[in-house]
Amino acid sequence: QVQLVESGGGLVQAGTSLRLSCASSGRTFNSLSMGWFRRALGKEHEFVASITWNGGSTFYADSVKGRFTNSRDADKNTMYLQMNSLKPEDTAVYYCAARPGWATLSRDDYKYWGQGTQVTVSS
Image 1 (cartoon, rainbow, N blue to C red):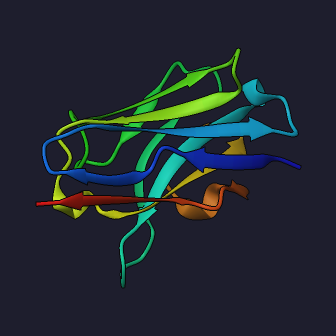
Image 2: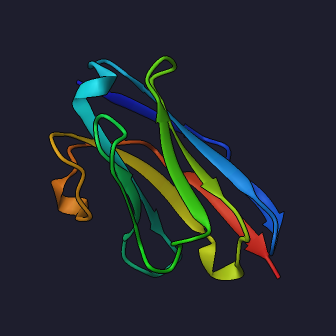
């Protein structure tokens, strides 16, 4: 079993930055590819970014490419999402997810999920 705990959400102004963290426990961190998804009020889950088990490859949604950076620290068993130039449309609950094997873009592929952290960007 894998436990994921997100942190770092909050209320910020447009144009500023925020860094989300996802701490993992319960299974060897380096065996898991991980991803970030978000869900805005009244909308479906949306893929944001993912990173392979070894950190060698990252994938981004077009809407965040160039603004968000997904990374991981094996020593801390933690994944990060650095979010720069935030926009009001980035407002959502952000979830981290993990899966054995390769990183994918599909929510259905991920077996383990965190509880989510709220990010609100004011204009």
